Image 1: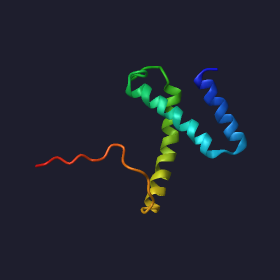
Image 2: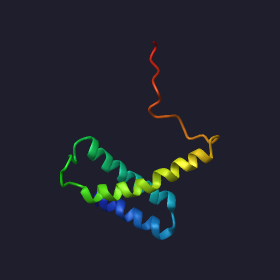
Image 3: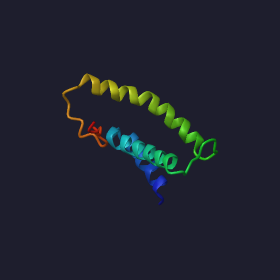
Image 4: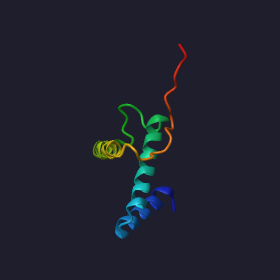
Length: 92
């Protein structure tokens, strides 16, 4: 079974059983795959590849990102982990 089919099955099982963390894991993995295609040239500007997925992703992230930001703002003392790409300060 290929990875996409496996991810679809895992998402269906997670949805059917109410396993939100597992479902989100599959969704974020698919979003990461689409991101890699965009960043690394698998989908190009004004191309036809992945346009439906890109529109779906844009709509989803348009709803999800504000919720994540609100959660983080409402919980300033929570440990969210280290910044993956911390600010680099230059000596002047």
